[in-house]
Structures are given as structure tokens and as C-alpha cells.
Image (cartoon, rainbow, N blue to C red):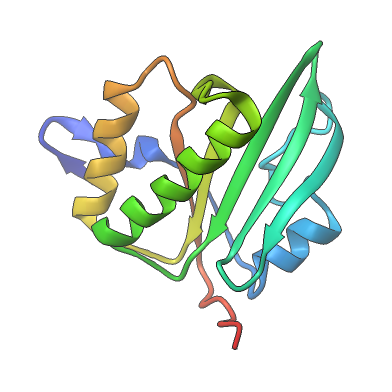
Length: 146
């Protein structure tokens, strides 16, 4: 999938098949290889919101502390991406005084528009000094919480 001279697949880190990724990640933060057992240690779930469909992990790697914010959303539109970004900014401010290099921003989705993927690519290029927005494609429709 090429758009405007760039490869949009570079924004996609991998593919999974899981009906309820949040529960799986709560049970095992190393599921889906989002976190690395060899590099990330002392991983702790510090916030979760099943209704809003996200988890926030604190991790230690080397002598540093970092955070991993993971959203699980069935369909990502440009508007939804902006909403998720506002949540991401809020947590960056709360936990790292807006040091975006300490935060991983990961979205698990099974439906992302090409325009939205293009926006992620542009963000990652514009803010290359920050951790990139990472997309993980879920091949299964995720369970919608009531």
C-alpha cells in the first residue's frame, strides 16, 4: 500500500487475531510482543479503562522508566485518532511532564482508513524525535463492551 511516495505499511507493527486484546494484555503484558521480555522488566499496569478501551503500562528498561499506552478500537477514523491523541497527551503530561519520548502510543484496530493511516505516517515523520504511533492490526472483530 503506497501513498504519496511513502509506504503506509511502515506504520503497521504487526498483526494479531484476538477477540479481546485488552483482557489478554492485562493477563500477560508481553502478549503480542508489544513489550519485550528481554528489554522491558518490572512492567506494571498503572491505569486501565475497559469502557474507553485502553491500558497504560509503566515499564523499566535499562535504567529508564517509560510508559506504554495501548488502545483497542474496532474502527479508527481521523476524528477517533484525534480523540485518542488527546488522551495520549493527557497521560504524557500527567506521568512524564510532556516528555513524549517516554511514551509509546499503540493502537490495536481491525479497521483503519487509508487517510487515517496517512495521518499516522505524517505524524511519525513530523515528530521523529518522539516515539511513533504504532498500529497493530487485529484480524478479528473485537468484543464491544456494554
